[in-house]
Length: 194
Image 1 (spheres, rainbow, N blue to C red):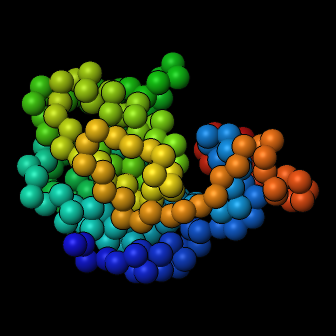
Image 2 (image 1 turned 30 degrees about the vertical axis):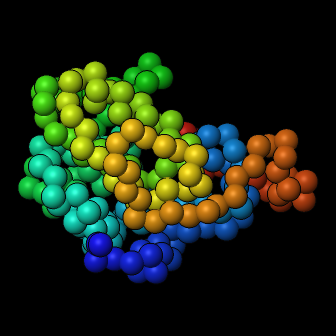
């Protein structure tokens, strides 16, 4: 078991101001009364180091050659997890609507890859990263995430280790009780920045 328990992890999120309450539009298009503002947490290297170390401890029995994460938040986490293992990191970026390796990042056939992600809601972005790694012929040994807020809906064909699983309600816009209460909808995340 890793050195951080659920309460210690939640405490880091609270200290960083990364767990918000209100009415939020998620990247998936769903609405939620809670939002995990990962960048509030990722701005603190000491917190990221502790969380990355907990992910690395979970996968310590595996031989890891490369740690891969999706841009943008996954870059910081991938770097720290790779540092904990003493290996290199790479990241995927969205190109023509799909996650791809760019910037001359390479994976060799047989490279043993640990994929990391900050927050999983539907698993769609993470599935795209998996596909990008598979296209390179690399071997995925597992997936480590900071927060799984999918309520079990996101599943992957590899060992999946979330540091924190949060049962956070989500609603389609048509079924959202917060919309019916006329609570202002907040758009957060990089897709909504001007």
